[in-house]
Length: 172
Image (cartoon, rainbow, N blue to C red; front, side, top):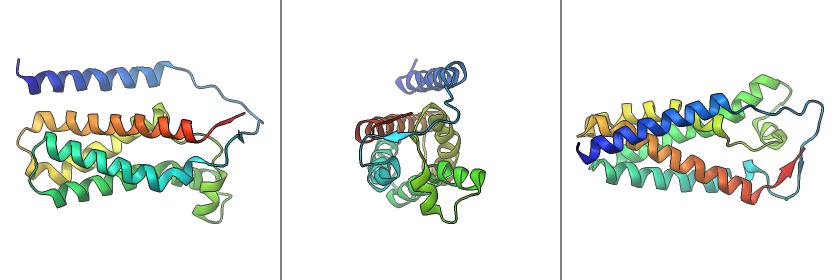
């Protein structure tokens, strides 16, 4: 078995495990309770920093591992996919609650951690197809590409979740 086939197989197994964990681990709901931040930093305040860090890491992983020569196309793909996936939780809250006049109010009202296992699943669903669609003409190994794109997203999403939990502490 070639090395790329092993990586692809491991990536498929990892994604399957993540999906199973998301489905099997119950969520706890604290109805009629208030979230309190113990730090002065909320997750939305970290968004510019983690967005840039995420874009850099994903860009480097995808460009270097897949040996894509068109750097500009990879950067555009990663930027577009991350813009969409970073904004989905905020827009979902804005449109679901319907009580906020501005997106800024929505950012400030989110009283929980933004990045969790559901967000990881959402990121894979959103970002992998967008990046693949934009860079598919540049990819030499089509099998390996989805695994690498997914791996880059898993790495950066877990990193952002860790940063969010270290910098922002809160509880019900």
